[in-house]
Image 1 (tube, rainbow, N blue to C red):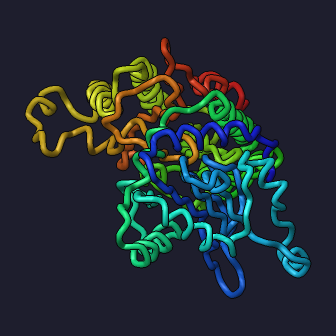
Image 2 (cartoon, rainbow, N blue to C red):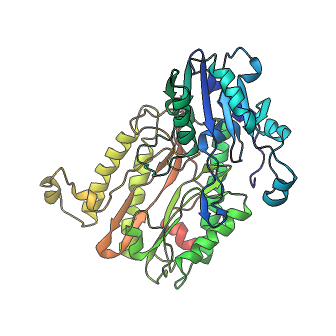
Amino acid sequence: MRYLPIQSKLFSDNRNRFANLLPNKSVAIFHSNEQYPRNGDQFFPFRQQSDLFYLTGIEQEKTILVIAPGAPNAKLQEVLFIIRSNETMAQWEGHKYTAEEARAISGVHQIRFVEDYDLVLRELLAWAINIYLNFNEYPKFFSEVKDRNERIGLALKESFPLHTYHRAAPLITQLRMIKSEEEIKLIQEACEITNKAFRRVLNTIKPGMNEMEVQAEIEHEFTINRANGHGYQPIIASGKNACILHYIENDQECKDGDLVLLDVGAEYANYSADMSRTIPVNGHFSDRQRACYQAVLRVQREVIKLYVPGNSINQINRRTEELMEQEMIGLGLFTLSELEAQDLKSPLFKNYFMHGTAHFLGLDVHDVGPKESILSPGMVLTCEPGIYIAEENLGIRLENDILITEGEPINLMANIPIEPDEIEGLMR
């Protein structure tokens, strides 16, 4: 791994908290991600399934974790299955974990090889009543390809139809929403690497550069600072491209007089940062650009005050919309009378601000957790108001990552420049 070693206590604590949520006579099964074919004899770069990493820290394909608290055979209450390597595999594919290495990383004492999985599972299922399977339940994600957890889980239900099956996702979501101190440190490191990359862009961008060249500067900084890479597909959107919310082509010229919207985040130890900044390609905001920028910044400052226990993402979104409406009137996008006469099924602000303000952040950039959840200390969320004026080829989004505490919210990106004067000064 590129990142520095993580104490196995993080993963042991996570497993213990999960095991404590299971009812009596239960077995929970977690599979690693697949190796997905790219072309010919190539796979896409492997990235571990987030839940398995959360519970083990293991970064290797074909890994299986079985948790069975209370099993009669104490050695099978927690078992990690890994690939058995050999000289040929090591020669062609590189090093695979030894049992000792897997034990040191994960804190799981009982390490077996994957060929032992069926025998161990059958012994456990002869005792168990409940089986917990781990399917991806992200509500806005629809994949035509079944992942390993779903594929093997469905086959298991056919082989053992008389057991009672349950969803592991609600339990693991409940745990992952609240970050431990160690997890917060990892997210902070991802934010700091993102800070370094953004400052590099401020020092290098100039009219005539291509968006892909800006991306290359970011990726250079990510790599030399031990990031895995991007936490998500980066958005380097200049001019009118900034009005495309998920623009990822990043292949157009950054022109003099335009703004460029950067939505990027380093992934460190599989934990992602998520930052948006919007800067002038030539180093100077026009009066109109500055007015729109400061409108978004004012809204962000006000909305961050809501990132306290007891509120929810839904409340944050509603307040952001109210504030953005007033800013849009000030920017001349519509009038107060037009606002009062609007069709509430198609509100005017949606023409210029069409996405939510907050989402959970962690092992996934859009991390687990429902929008109606009440905010609690230890949660990390984004705050990303924006404004998109297509007829002016102008899009602005400002995004910081916020930690919920018992008191005031903590801006994990407080060191990343956001004030327009500071940005212009650094670009000079």
